[in-house]
Every structure is written in C-alpha cells, then in structure tokens.
Length: 104
Image (cartoon, rainbow, N blue to C red; front, side, top):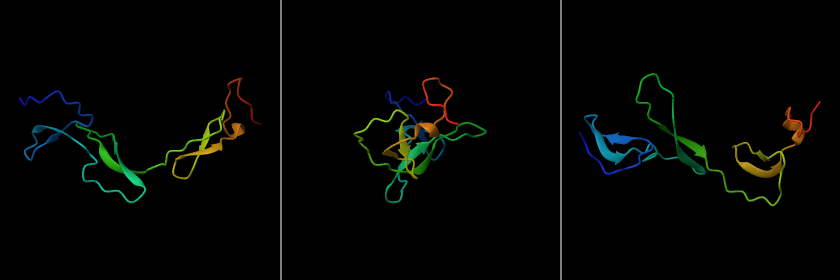
C-alpha cells in the first residue's frame, strides 16, 4: 500500500501508467488551455460507474465588480453570467413572501 504525506487532494490522486495511485494530486486543469478571457474550472460530472473524476471546462473569467449601490432584490448579471451594478427589478423576482412586492 502506498503511503503518502497527509495531502488534501480535492480531485483525488494521479495514477501512473499502470493505473496505480501516486502521491501527486490530480489537477484536471493542468495543461488545459482556455481562450482569452476564460479560465479553467474543474467540474464534477455524473457517471454510471466510479471513479467519477472531475473534468476541465473553460468558463468566462468574470471581472471583479465593486458597486456603490445596494440592491434589495440583488444585482443583474450580463450575458456571460457576470455580476453588474444594475439592480434587478423587484417585480421580475416575484415571491410569495409577504415582505416582497407582489407582481400582477
């Protein structure tokens, strides 16, 4: 049995050419190249049989947005899913909560 230092490998360990576990952490994004303004992200996938190792995926790298306003219903997101400083219209977020506006 292989004894490794107390590593915390969130994506498991690498395996060698014989399929045996090594003491190196698996990084699905290692060597994975994304286009400009995108970054690699490890995504857990569903599979039929274990092991279900995560895969690399390119996602838009949203810029950090600092807003000077407060929005009671939250902020809008753009076409890339990134936060903006525009408030969500409370009537677009209809809730049955009595503290929220009721939209008709």
